[in-house]
Figure 1: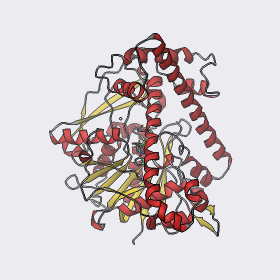
Figure 2: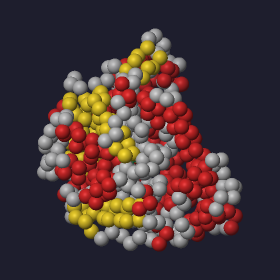
Figure 3: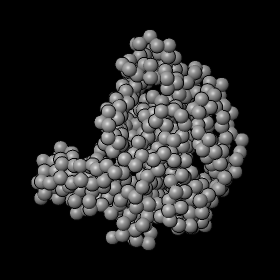
Figure 4: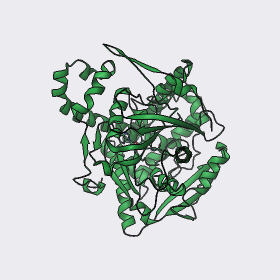
Length: 498
Ligand SMILES: C[S@@+](CC[C@H](N)C(=O)[O-])C[C@H]1O[C@@H](n2cnc3c(N)ncnc32)[C@H](O)[C@@H]1O
């Protein structure tokens, strides 16, 4: 375990109009830069409806963070703020949810760069991306440029005959239905090609700007400031659904240490919430499209809780909170299918070039032994790269315990009686998409739903305002490979009593 004691000794100051607050923050290195059913299917009953944060609940945050407020709130006096709040929060909810469309386009760019189901061309590598990312242009003469252009041609060719390829169907929906492109004439296709190449360039430029922001944060020479900056680096980015296996290793290691410390005891976790479970579309270098879209984290957490004896399979209930209809639909379908006895199969690819640490390989080998059985994985396509893959078929009794709820954690929570609050909330790679004000609202929503003594684990840094009843107690750093920056700091937050 790597630990940097400096992180928790540091102090984060916020200047306010009247006085200055110094409060310790929890920190994170975060995620490295590295697609509807009716609402009733999302497990929403009258008891479990998402509620907006009320003005009186948000007021202390609005007062403490005057200088960090969005412009449309900043110019209002307290009376005006109180009146404007109900409309503002609904409007902001729509704006946040609108960021999903941009995230869908980013997923399409990743499908273009890394997909293997519609093309024989090699996947683009991170090294090749780094070579052209400098100026974010596709005119650099780098060898990968014709590969990307060829991949765009292949995708456009197959869009007309998507068949049952769910990712191509998604691409059709985004490009043809939502964006209004057509495939009828040569000019239509040329226009679409130009649009896709422009999207790739935009995406590469954005990635370059995130890398730059993280480098600038590093130059600050203050680990706390660096982690705080890293933890909101995607605040203007589209909301992506991407997910991968290894953050769950860092969560397992954290829960192991938390059990040893007695912060959670044997069989004490009855209710767990996963904020933003995600969906593996073809995102990032670890993402592939030669198996059906899948979610990993809800299953990984159940697997871990059972392995560590922190939960009993008979009573454990898992709630997922996500604002993505695509993610919620996927989970609702999994739960529905499990009720009819169907098993959920997770494919677990491992890139042999990634030089995982033995702990990561051990976790990959062990994944699922508490919740299912190892089965034959799907066949690897020739252009997938140097991979090993295993697959786990998960018992229906596990997926029936996972209930998806449509909820925007920044602005909403479920009003739960104390006895029904969560013992554990997991939120990795979520808060990084928001700024300090929105993160603080999110923490207030978490506070509403966590039982006193309950734990939230996140790999993003959150400002702890003095009145917050959710406080960081420690953190754990887990490194996944020898590649630079390949790991996560998991911050342990605990809910204080009322
Ligand atoms: C990058 S994925 C992370 C997936 C997974 N937690 C992991 O670490 O691999 C972000 C997920 O959070 C969801 N999300 C983003 N903003 C959210 C919000 N305000 N409320 C609820 N879910 C959100 C996205 O739809 C997506 O499922």
